[in-house]
Image 1: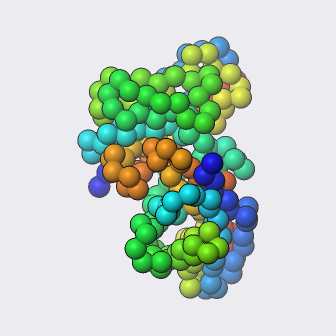
Image 2: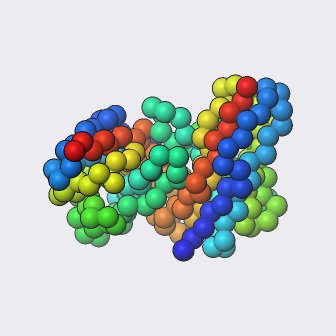
Length: 113
Length: 113
């Protein structure tokens, strides 16, 4: 089975802090994604990466950056956390083949106070 | 631009009754389409996917979905709902570049006894 692991399930951070959300996948997938999930808004794509050191902005990249130094690991960075970034963050991965399933981690609940 | 619409925010169904969750998409080419389920506090699990072959797709947990090109719909169905089916359900389709999935805003299913 594909496993996407998000190391932190629940975080509470202060406004202005730098926050790292880490994600690891064990299936040698080329693509990795970060989505944000908010009630009534569904999932919105923040960033995705199709290869090591490669990244593309999604629909809501403002206030976020990402890092992919190794194929299996994709990090989401909040340079200066704000209260409007309180949300559930979901990491996912897939192969490059169009239409292939995207596999999700269990999510990281971030509260910024 | 591609879009996925789930018209129903919340549906309540009696245990043992049939279920249909609606999904409409806008997509230029023949789409790939997905249904995911999310239990409270968890990540998303793939229920089924459509790959332009059979219009009726079988998935896990007794779910099926029918692709209707003329109606731009991909509705999810189950003949007899169980209490454990209570969850949030998301329909998804590729974005315009084909690089990620875009999601509907989700439908929350409640099951009454």
